[in-house]
Image (tube, rainbow, N blue to C red; front, side, top):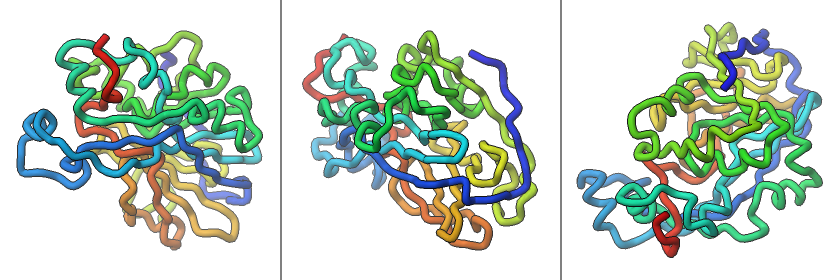
Length: 277
């Protein structure tokens, strides 16, 4: 793992650097209703007893065409999670993964296949920003050996905490050989248009892509504010599809959308039908 890297940070600049923002889907996920809507029951009680599933939710990746390269926000779910019986931990941990979510990921839902619908390949990706490191956001990492992978230093520190797999961090699918990780930290925000955020990170150095700290889902979760010329800004968050309204975004309402399906509060889940490793 690389040491924390200082990124270029500037005042807001030309937003015309963002040429297009597209969404691709790496399959769908169904989760327990108690997860997105809450429950008075303790988490493990509803996790072990709940029967219904939500309707399928897309597991999205955002593709940003920037004048300085191709950028992804999150990388989706790995198809191996539904084809490889050894993808998830075994034992009780694996059983809990089974209980929490079920996935539908076809051959056409890999990161490579979905990028191809836009005329790109994983080798074209210059940078991938990880909102956080739960399984439905890190699935395409193995295909991105040529890209810089940005993750908050606080999020990376979660991998060294006790029981990472029990908390939803599958280290064997994150700490892969050949990947180029860059831990990043926020600095005091100089742009009043980012209020109430007091810290931020200018990813490209031109004000078009700004990382914002949004801890809560995980300790190091981040969101990405995209400023575009003559269009409303976008705020991409990697947790749930509910709208976010916490950023002025240069005096314009931010349009918020989820980069993936909702990740579990403490752990993710595998597709039912796969036996424990």
